[in-house]
Image 1 (tube, rainbow, N blue to C red):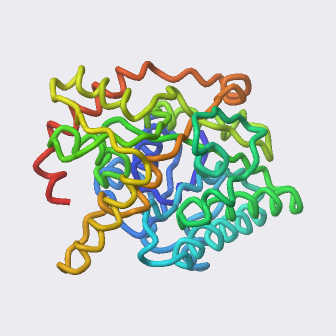
Image 2: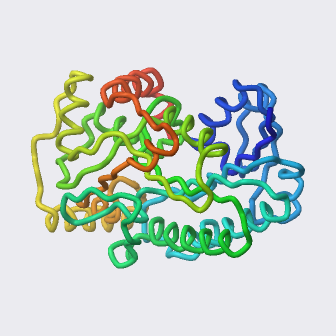
Image 3: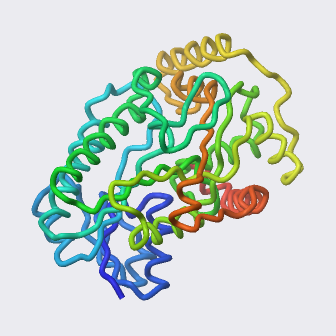
Length: 332
């Protein structure tokens, strides 16, 4: 059995991956700003704090065989500028790689499909796609993830670090307590989505994603990138599937992109004036929903044996979990 460190182990993917590794008998260490009592009770060794604290990172990673670097700030807004995102995504990733170099440990890094697989029109992207710097210039999360991924690959190549870059699409499934992805499902069930945005997404199950991350630790080719997706579909198609599986009618209004962006911007401004914040009204969220995030997962299928489950299975489990925990989730 191996000894692994997970950064960002309180997140949606982090918790799912940690449980999977513990089930397999591995020693799991976690460094995160928060805590997860259930994982600690199961035996995860916990370090509470930032990966940007060298002493904490060194202690948490002592003698590990590999690092799953999942720490990130998933927040789709321009309200707070770019530097906080850059600090964690770029400088934090550099710190992880430098520590891995000292240890001789492999790193499986959670990037995002949005570094290369995003467009204004429906287009499917594979691993040869170029970085979308221009398109993401106004989106702090995605732009700094591009900066981090580019830096990480250059540093790993220079220093001989075994780095595998994973680029997941939109994660759904049970146990998304932070609503990092499942807010869409909650809002759909609560009939809070007023219109159908014009874009498209790729949906993938978080449990399948955790499995392929574990596989990448031993089978992924160093310095390779892997788009991790399952099903490409428009948001209208996604809402139709949610409607069929949940019995909740989808929104009927379809707005063109310019009008949707205008509505989001005005709504966010009114919320600011009222002293309230609603992440669903942020202009960036609507801008993202007006684009297409379609991926070709051929490389992961060839190298990692990637075989995701059917979309309806993921959506059905997501709906059931959100409904079972709706009151708690609404309070978040």
